[in-house]
Amino acid sequence: MADEIVLPETVTKEMLQTLFSDAYMDVSTDTDGDIVVKQSYRGYVMPATDGRWIRLYSLFKSSETATPEDKLAFVNKVNDELIILRAYVTDNGGFGFEWYIPVEGGITNRAIVMAVQRFHRMLDLAIGKDVKNVVG
Image: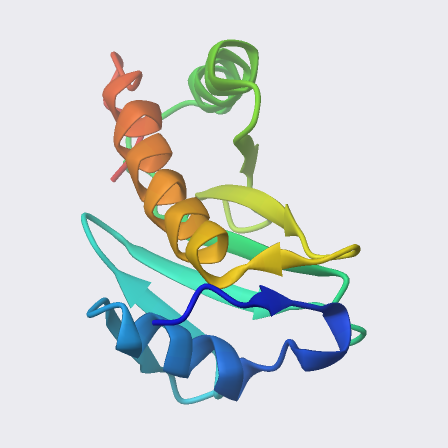
């Protein structure tokens, strides 16, 4: 993988999928054509339509016994302690985690790959903060 500069106008789903494949990552596309990178968890990679950023996100179900208060306490703890990872309760009561990689001004291929790897390590840390077993 050459460490060339990636600019917003060159960011596409196809470019990203090739980048992750060249970096020997477990990458595929789902039925909607979204990029999926699997490490500890299943994570999605979505470039902005104009390529100015890349959204990384992962979705989790909640425990059937988790109360709304415990769910909110969990995401607040993650947001407070991990800062760069954004956690939220989804509309269906599960959990979402996301992080954005800025591309505007240019970023290297290596930095994108490392950011995706870092996102997965942050997911491990976030799930580790689930002391009340609210994540299903």
